[in-house]
Length: 184
Image 1 (cartoon, rainbow, N blue to C red):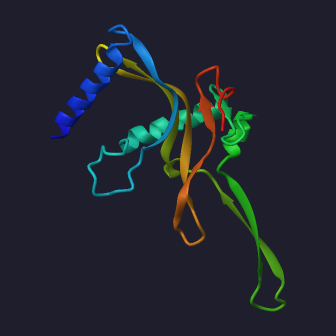
Image 2 (spheres, rainbow, N blue to C red):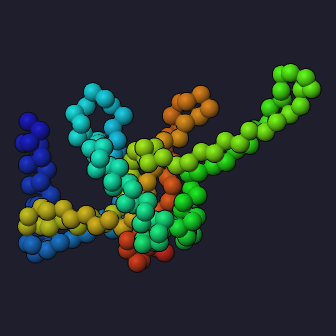
Image 3 (cartoon, rainbow, N blue to C red):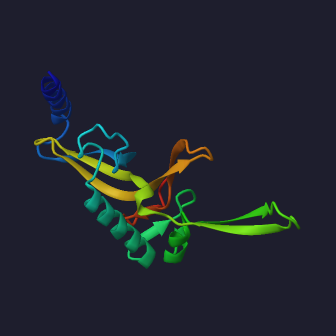
């Protein structure tokens, strides 16, 4: 049943656009689309490949992305204001140092500080946000996706350990036009 629906939808798309374009032409479906891809499934009951990249490959992918960002091999930008970042600035994202003050429970009850250093773990990157351009070939219905940029996302938890959502770390852009013509 599902394959029949897909065939019907494909036929409708083909008919709708074959009249106005020559067969074989690629046309831009959208010059910009943004979406998240889960690369580490939170659902243990799903088959391993659904919303998941196998662990060894996922780790290698993330390490290669971070290495390219840290070393300056790729152009990296602040996620929110698109300001270009150096490798050291990217390296500091996701890392934090907190100082907590406590009072001793024995005399003389003086205060002492504890420094907590939190480092970004590759295991916390569970999604990748993409910006892409999509082109469709009228003749073959081949969809070509060009990655304009991507951003690694980490899980963001509240003080009680509840998942609040996903926090983007930075953008990597591959197209020279970006981030200049992104509009919010």
